[in-house]
Image 1 (cartoon, helix red, strand yellow):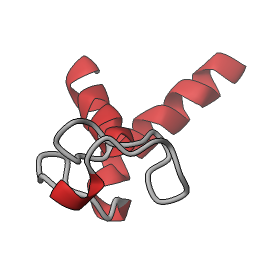
Image 2 (tube, one colour):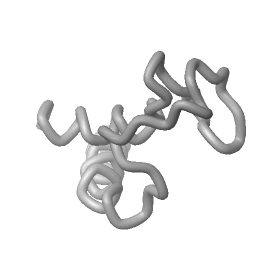
Image 3 (cartoon, one colour):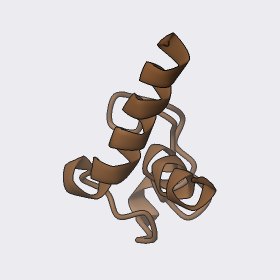
Length: 64
């Protein structure tokens, strides 16, 4: 049952992430290139300045 609750919670997050995320998954931010994890970007940013947490949730949509 715990696994079902965790899975349902992740599915809910994947569905609502476009409404709650302040970052676009594909938009470049040259001021935030390769940042380490912080409060602003919990998973950090990639080489193009895209937020990795937002990209993980959008990737979850394709994985489901």
